[in-house]
Image 1: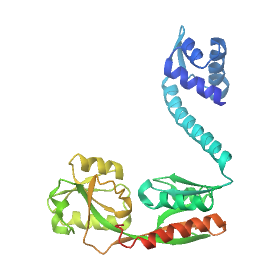
Image 2: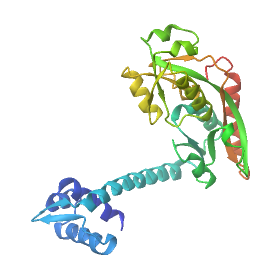
Image 3: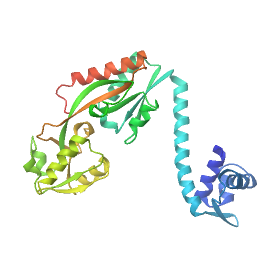
Image 4: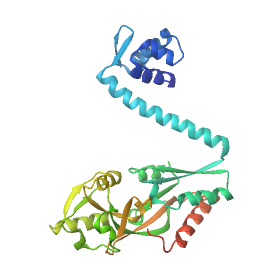
Length: 296
């Protein structure tokens, strides 16, 4: 299966018309139809489309197939674009696996300072809410943002300390709790707490303690973005690590009175001794050291 066949298949699924699909792909209809038939009979072995004159509709199997095909085509397009960008300007690349963009608040500033000294090396953030560790261990990324507690059994790696992140309560800015400087357990009584969403172990323990009091309602939320949407809709409040704060000002983030913190680190491969990697890590760690009063 080549990229031409993929594009033809996606276009026919969109237009449901052989003539229009061929026209949009700038080929003759016989060529267009032949490539679709070749894809079905020799490449995948099942009918993707049901024919009706010049029209075509997706079969149930075809509907699922084209859905995956579209995602694959987007990934391929992105890979080609990244390759073009890299080959045009850079001689090396340092990739960083992050669960979300805001995990490393000083990353943009680090990239700017780094490229002033090493303009031939590209810094590529790779956002992987799940499976970031697996990709790193397969050497698919050079650096991994992680909690210190999750790095104890990682062989062949070096752990670079960044910062300790505290727990905050997230509420809408018009919430009465937004006026407080510090939140304690009693402040949460009779409120609905969003829980779940891949919370770190320390936060899970705190959530379970609060729920066990019987004085706090709770609502399961699958991920942080869903949680923020529910908070904005007035469905509840949330406790979260400070490293998830994008500092946009949309929500109030108030420190929660507890001893739990998250030791945030970057992990590199032990055998990666590139000068550029060392410089990047030095710049980033120094920015965090200087940010003593910055809320994390």
